[in-house]
Amino acid sequence: MRRVCVFCGSCSGADESYARLTRELAEELIERDLGVVYGGGSVGLMGVLADRVLDLGGHITGVIPRKLEQRELAHEKLSELIVVDSMHARKARMAALSDAFIALPGGMGTIEEITEMFTLLQIGYFQKPCILINGMHYFDSFVRFMDEMVAKGFLSARQRQLMQVVETPREAVLRCLPG
Image (cartoon, rainbow, N blue to C red; front, side):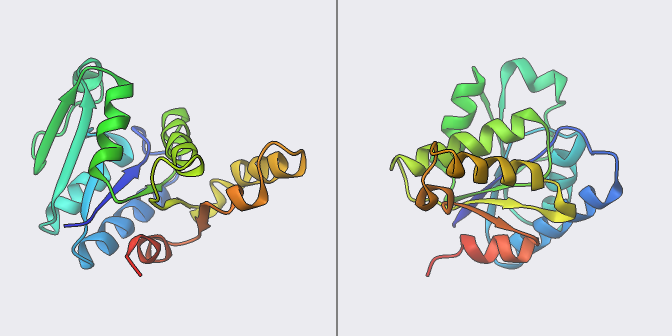
């Protein structure tokens, strides 16, 4: 089974539309029989994602550091929960388990996670898609910042194109499929 890693917030955000976007992504992934890998929490958008995947009978693997197991309230009903020793180990395990990476709205952890995967893709450690779902224009500033990196000579235009930006969960999931 192909698996897609979803990075998203441990908070729900100030607008219900972020939760709707998250549920829509879960539905698109399960409709195409894709497994989900995520941060293992039961709160915020992470909890919304896990609950919807489980409601639809999908397979979801959570990867959570021991230190966050209680703070983010590790989801107790997952298909699989992997507890690791550190944030570094979390990202490494998520990267190893996944065939593609999608970022939904979230905080600094979400940005840090997707940019690490983008960096690994950019320098050739793997050839797995990295995708931002820019629903409700959440990532507009981040996309402009990447474009500024290109304009100022710190990121090549070719490398910049490796971070795919889409508006909808359907577009994101279609970019995760082979061929």
